[in-house]
Image (tube, rainbow, N blue to C red; front, side, top):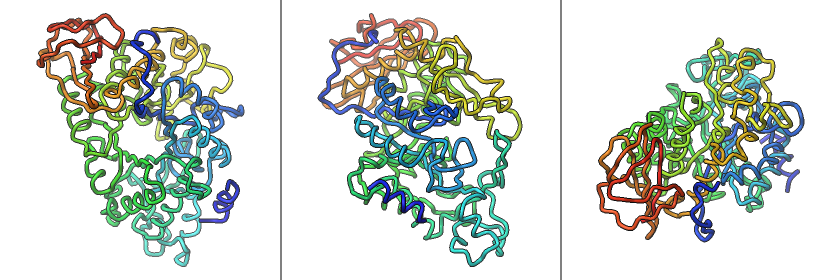
Length: 513
């Protein structure tokens, strides 16, 4: 690693769901909060959300019931989303300093929470040392760190979608190329880079280290490049094995490039711990009983022992759920499925207040995704301390922004409203954590006689819960195929269990059996 990196190592040697008091004796399940830190909270007035802002809002997240945080990439980049690095070893100065980052990590751990960071080291920009030193220089020590289209190393290879450059929302043109993941030197570099974030001061304590990584766009055959094949065995697995030798407790989650993939090959060949349940997300979005059952069977029951799946309804690459003409009741039902079915629920920042946002189509620019990554709405009037308007006055994505004053979609408008989406999330997470079967138990379909009602069991030890959910906007009468006696409603509504019962539109209930 370079001197600047080494020096850093040395520098820092509500009531609707309340049925009983939470049981603090069993381990709580993990609830992830996927946050675009640039859009979350600005601590220094430069309109960019930052690490100190995130640290300031940890009490908010913890009160919501969040146990873990997943950050966007932190490294220096010309792209607002930070996915293509100028330098992997520097924190983007708009987020703060390395000291700010380490202070955040320690505060997260002091609160009993976990922190994960997103890493995509498969690409670099023309500002990166490897590009600057290796292009047109066959004697460069980095000559095999990136791919070239010619033997003289004058033309860096294309990246994903055969692109050579990206147009930034702010007018920047960012030239990007693909890293040679087959180079042993690149593997060694990645081991050192990731290892630093696991244990920055190398004291073996990990209070200043991340709890895991998200591997963006991880592939066995990267982007169809002829030379970049068999990467699960030759790059990803050796990297993960090396990292777990440092801290066996870390979790590695990979985002499959093919969203139709359930990720089983990643588990087996790359040895990742977690994948993303895209199939279940699409099924929940469709509110289709058969698709929900089929995908839950694959994602929640057939995932290998010791491996896990993220269950989600939003992320940074898809349109926000609230923008798809879904009513508040439907948003609540989707959230309940995400939180009740199993796996590790992942909440995308702002999802808990129903933030809207879709992709734009304003030319060939990365600004088109800003609609999905706008500033978290803290205030009724859409303005106030900490608002992260980094895209202010930047073009069509600003003049067409989803955030509107007094539209009901802000934390300030919802926090004291017991019927709000925010309080629904808070109370449903609390219900999930109250019972081991819901927080960490297994999933099993519970057959019933109604095509508009999904029902399933959650089990942990001797504890068994039955969950039933009406997917429709009409009342539904339903009978569970199994004989159920003595079930007790723990979800706080008025639905007592009977042989045949009625669920109101989009209503759901949980019974302890």
